[in-house]
Image (cartoon, rainbow, N blue to C red; front, side):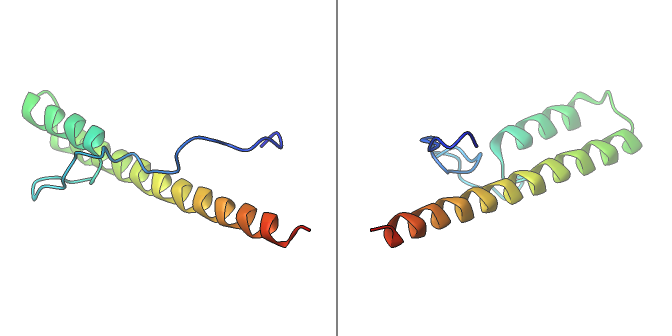
Length: 85
């Protein structure tokens, strides 16, 4: 936000080769991997797993919100460039 154009890709956290599987909970390969590892470890109580799931869902929601915002900014910048002489 320093006035320079962000040249990073506006893609989401999804890996290009990550197909969403039926067992995927968060549709994000990194969150799904962490979730499955925590679930299979047996080291967490059901209350801790519920808390972890809430945290991961919150992260997923915030990432989605960020991607929408970045898309909106990108479109707005494009419209501004087109309207300038």
